[in-house]
Length: 173
Image 1 (spheres, rainbow, N blue to C red):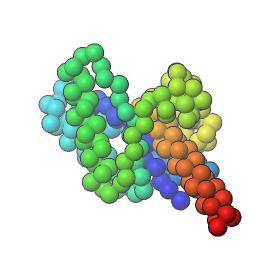
Image 2 (image 1 turned 90 degrees about the horizontal axis):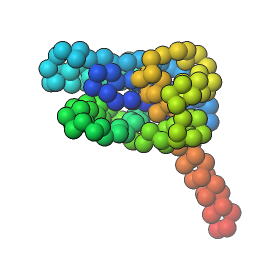
Image 3 (image 1 turned 30 degrees about the vertical axis):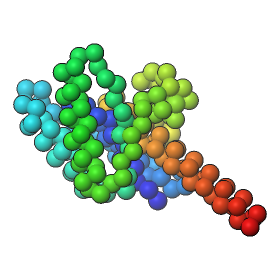
Image 4 (image 1 turned 30 degrees about the horizontal axis):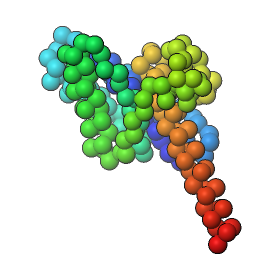
């Protein structure tokens, strides 16, 4: 069994979602959003992100973390602030001993919907189908669940390929 913590980084709202993976079976565990106050100084907001995600890791004890890569904005200052948030998010997971994998947005959408050009509504609808009981969440949490599903799919595929290669190699030897 693997517990995947999916993360959708943001300075204002960071979505998180936890999915249990057993073979090719997925089960919704939990999801939510860590919010920061836009009126707080940057350092305080980063501490809020760290503390909120550290509590999620403590509560659900995931075994791996998957983070959605972010698109660079035209506004350099916004991109830099988002980079700070991503750094804290990745650090929090890594400091807890979790392996951290990053996925581009298009890869996440393709894994969940079948196309990298999917709209947020399509991703949310597929998450409700793939993870019964997930319900309706804010888009940040839904996107985080999609990242977790993407990682689960990628990990299952790699494991299946490894088993196939071992059986072929084992049959030849």
